[in-house]
Structures are given as C-alpha cells and as structure tokens.
Image 1 (tube, helix red, strand yellow):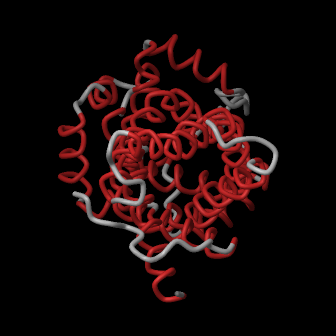
Image 2 (image 1 turned 180 degrees about the horizontal axis):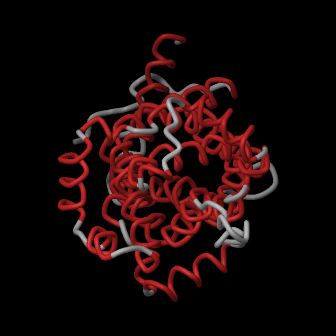
Length: 313
C-alpha cells in the first residue's frame, strides 16, 4: 500500500509532458469505466423521461442498478455497455488533456502571485474545467447520443456507426450549433468538476500527506482521488442529468420546439415530472464512472509520469 508511484528523483515535467500524460491517463482510465457511463446515462435518461412514457418505461426507470445492468446485457449483449467507446475516448483526448493540463499550467502561473492554497486550486480548477468542456462539447454530444441510442424505440434510433459518423450526421442533419446544445450544463458541470475533482484532489493529496500517506505513494493517490470522486459525483449529478436530457432531446414533430431550453428549466422540468431525486437517478453507476475514472486516471497519470522521468532521467 505504500508503493512509490514517482520513484525517480524529483524533476520538473515540461508543459508538453504534462498535457500528454494527462490525456493518456484520461483515456486509459475511461476505457476501464466506460460501461458505468453507459449505464449511468441510460438510467438517468430513463428516469428523466419516465413521466412521459408508457408503463414499461416507468418500470425500467425504477429498476435497481444491478437489475438495470442485467436487463441491458440480457437484451442487448455485453458489448452494448461499450457502445460509444470511440466517442468517450475522443472526448478524453480533448477533455482530460485540456482540463488537467490547463489546471497545472494555471496553478503554476497563479503560484507566482499568491500561495497555492484551497482557494487558488478551486479557482483554477473551475477555469480549466470550463475551457476543457467547451473544447470537447462535440465529442460529449456524440458520446451521449451513441450511449443512449439502443434504449430508444426502433423508429427513433439514429443508428450511429462510429464517433465520426455521429459527428458528421449531427453537423449535417442538425447544424453545427447542435454540438453546443447542452453546453451550458456541461460547462457548469465541468467548472464544478474542475474544482471538486482536480482542485480538491490536489488539496486532498496535501491533506493525506499530512496524516502519514507519502504524497507520491499509490495509497495517497488512491485515497485522494476516491474522496475527490465522491465529492464531485454528489455535487455534479443534477447538471449531468440536465446535460444528458438536453444533448439527447429531439424536437416536437408538430411544433418543432425542443422540450428543454436551459439548464435551470431542464432541472425544474425533470424534478417536477419525476421528483427531485430523479436528478440523482443512476447515481451508483455515475459514481462508478466518476469515482472510478478519478482513481484510474490519476493513478495512470502518476505512473506515466514516473515512467517518463525514469526514461528521461
């Protein structure tokens, strides 16, 4: 448990190395937790739309996490849990690389003017999260669409074949602006994620180091990332629900109007139709995704940086 992650002598990583290891760590971590994301999205959207669908849809929305997962695997096969993996990896290439990479750049720049404390970490976490989210919106919309497609009635399925197919069809059929249709909750969520995941992770590492877990140990990285993942999962779940609803919505065939028009309106609509707790529907797989990805991403990042230092040193 006290295994050393960065065994090599301390050396300063260059900016390129920071961004590359952040991106690779994000991609590798996502490959581990992608099934949780698929289940979380589908449970979340099932609950959000249950009030407007038939009894079977309502029953499906009320299933437990294990029962919901078992039903998907039984009806669609285990491979359906990895639906949208290409979009998820593409998202991480842009999102994880820019979010964690920019966090470290912003943090180090701010350190020239003030001490690096919790406030500065939360501030730069929010800034880096917002920038990363806006950059990766097209991949995020493609991911949500591909992950949820099989849960739709056959006549409503879009049947995307790949992330490139999804992206090109969304652009040609709905316009480029469709990629940023759910950008408001996504950016707000990413700001909270940047603060509560990356910012608090950095702070928790200091805190756990002060109680005996060496900062560069696997136990420190694991404890800090698991704690940060739980915190940000609880705080950001309502925004995740709003983002999923706005990203996957279709216009009314008669009026041409979209059911969800803003982050607040979406959360109010879901809470009014299905109860406030519907905003946290699918929390267990969501935490499996968020907490799992936080742990695996940061462990991979530290291991990759340790390897880079050994090779370069």
